[in-house]
Structures are given as structure tokens and as C-alpha cells.
Amino acid sequence: MRRALLLLPILALLPAAGLGQPAPGLAETILTLGETAEVARAPDELVATLRAEARAGTAAAAQAQVNQAMAAAVARARSVERVQVATGGYWTGRTDEGRAWQATQTLTLRGPDAAALLELTGALQQAGLASTGLTYRLTREAERAAREEASRLALAAPQRRAQAVAEQLGLQLIGLREVRIDAEASAAPRAALAMRAGAASPVAVAEEIIVTARIEAVAVLRPR
Image (tube, rainbow, N blue to C red; front, top):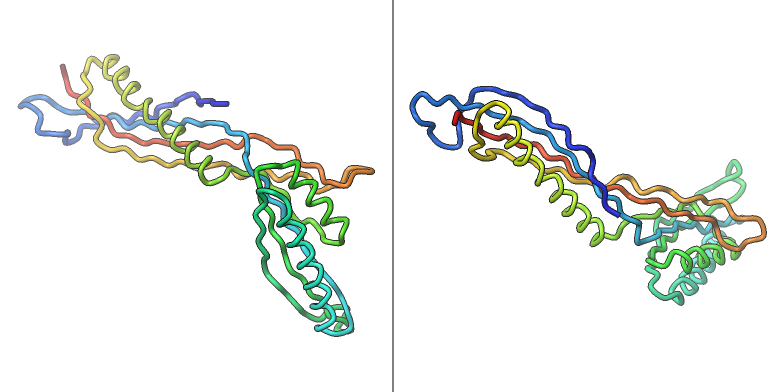
């Protein structure tokens, strides 16, 4: 799906030096425009974050439980096609006012097949890991392509708009002197972590991600 926002120009009409030396007696005017365009993309990757956690009377015992749980989780995750597996931070410290030790390690899973990843996440929850995050996102390749398209949409507007304004003012468009582009993706929506009653997998409904490009351009106008 592709959408473009209404392009709203910000106009500033000021005399200025032109792209080149104007002919004697021909004053120049600069036209500053701000344009915005956006494209909407369905996310093509789901990222799940889980945590293995254990408490015991000694640090070694707590760590051993976490190590065992994490080893089993990594092996299970690697058996699922197209799932990327990465382990995260490892922490050990005292808890319960110093009466026990707690160990924690995080696990991050990502993949293009949301159904398979959600099933895997549910299985790991059943095995004792806790889910801490489910996020839909665009892969780097998809986000780069969306940014390029949004930039193309926004770039097409300044010259067209400048030409229209020049005609309204009885001037002619000489060209664009400055162009600034800023493109970014919206924050990826987080999916629900709640388990459905009687289901083994968490619920995660995807939303479109909006990629926006903003353009600032300076056009030079001269009398006809």
C-alpha cells in the first residue's frame, strides 16, 4: 500500500542572490518550500524478546538453571526455519533481601514468518521463559526501499509547486538551489503479550509502518 500526504508548501519570498548572476535590472526572489510525503508498508519481520530467570540459594545454582534453560531454548529456536537467534545480557545478583541469588539472561528471536515465531514463542513460554516484548518491524532492506520511495514522492513536489507559484506571481522558475531530505520510519507497533485463553501462542496483530520523507527546498524565481 502506498499513500502520499497532502503537500503543504511553506513560502518565504525574499530577494536573494540567484543561481547565477541575473541580468541587470532583474531582481531575484527565493521561494522556500517544505514538502512531506509518506508510504505505508506492512511489516515483514517479527521480533520476540524472552527472558530466562532462576532463583536459588547460591549464585552457581541460579546460573546453572538459567544456563540449562537458555541452552534448551536456543536449540529449540534454531530448529525453526528462518528464525534468527541471539542471546542478550546476563545478570546475577542477590534478591529477597540477600537471602537468595537470582540469575537472568535474555533471548531475542526474529524472523519473517510471524505464525512460526509466535508458535515458537508460545512453546518457550510453556517451557518457563517469560516474554518481555513482541514487535513488528521492517527489515533493513524493506525500510531502505520505503525511504527511497517516500523521498522520490517528496522530491517530485518542490519543483512542481515552485513552478505553479512562479506562474501565479508572474515570474519564471530558474531552478532549485538547495534541497534537504529527511526520511524516517515510524516507531514499530508493539504487539500484545497476553496469551489467549486455552492457546499456546501469544496474540500479535500487525499494523502498517509509516515511512515519512520531509523535503526543504529553495527555488529561485526571476521576472519573465
